[in-house]
Image (cartoon, rainbow, N blue to C red):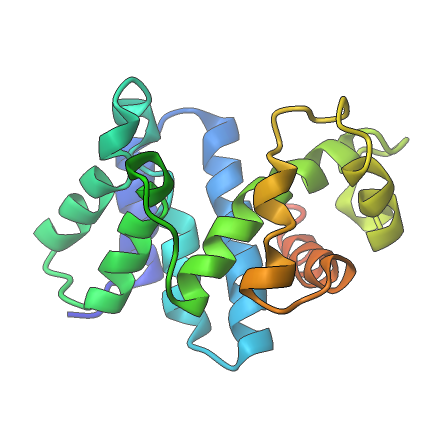
Length: 188
């Protein structure tokens, strides 16, 4: 079976009630689609992985060792059997279990997850609070201010340089461009 985006949205919204978390998942979906295009991969699969990566957070936030495993279980229950997709979803929580991402898809998810939050925080600092007013240089400036969006793990984001062989500036540009395609959907 091939999980559709509509099925993934329905699953996400049935399991996640917090609007800001939903927006985060939509942001990561857009970032993953842009990264898939950059790497010449299947943007539909990568987007679904990004969309669902945190879908079980409200149920597992007190048990992070099971974070993303529960979501993969729910996806399997829908009939999905694509192990690349399922393993990529599970890989999101792997750092809580002491393992690192192995595929390009998993590495992109690992690096872009925190970056989407930093980009949102940067947009919220613009006069219009819009992604359209954000550029790569403004994100770079905020990246090097550790007190700004202090929860965004820069050590994960910067891994784009070693894991993906992408300079930080290029990585930010790809993710930002992807997020800007859904600015209205996420209210920015």
